[in-house]
Image (cartoon, rainbow, N blue to C red):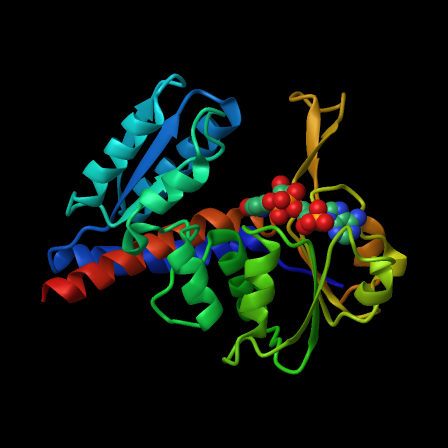
Length: 295
Ligand code: NAP
């Protein structure tokens, strides 16, 4: 078994982005992303801080808007409208979750699709389904595809099984694997809680993508020997031996499954680091498209 090192692959991608961002800036377009944080949810604050740091390290300009938790939907929509019109901003990210009184779907739909670097807008989800090259693909599914590509795993002709059907991971990654394109072209099965005996399907997977949101959803007996296993899950487990009081585990029983799989992603250090890298990559792509429209 070998480990797919998401940290290492992510660092390589960020070096590439840094070089390309500098080249684009030298031609007059510095890639820029606006990040909106509503409220002070500690996890959201730490995600936003990590995103700002990654932008600074790769030469992407970040514009931070912090709004109090009592911000109204109208106020948030008007901030998005302002950023939609700002030429220096090529990507807009609204950190989720939003306070309960705000309709997330209305907020996502207010972002111009060409600035939707999170890839959550229905236009970008539709383009993903159609296989359009100018789509912004949501960052976690894009990161999974990039991990496979850079690990030399070609899904073409393989049976890929996706455990989970969320709009942000399961459905988009299943559709990316299905595309009639290089780096995809798999036969895809999607399992969910309505699937009786998911193991019957996962045992047939050459590539198994697990995004269920529960620790140990996949055990060794559910994995075909030699399969490639991508664990998307991030779960906090109480651990008194840690200073923080918890440790992160995935959805896969890593120790047992790594004895069966040929390649596997660890948690942390697998899919996680790729998500921010894909956000940077989408912002660079948007800035390039913007520069192309200007010339
Ligand atoms: P989600 O919205 O909770 O969806 C979970 C999906 O898994 C649902 O479709 C659910 O089925 C299915 N499921 C749950 N238990 C199952 C089981 N025992 N057998 C088969 N299917 C099962 O979660 P998500 O947003 O997709 O996220 C999944 C995991 O990835 C979470 O741990 C999350 O923290 C993590 N995540 C990580 C990153 C990253 O950057 N590393 C990014 C996003 C998410 P139903 O539809 O039938 O309910």
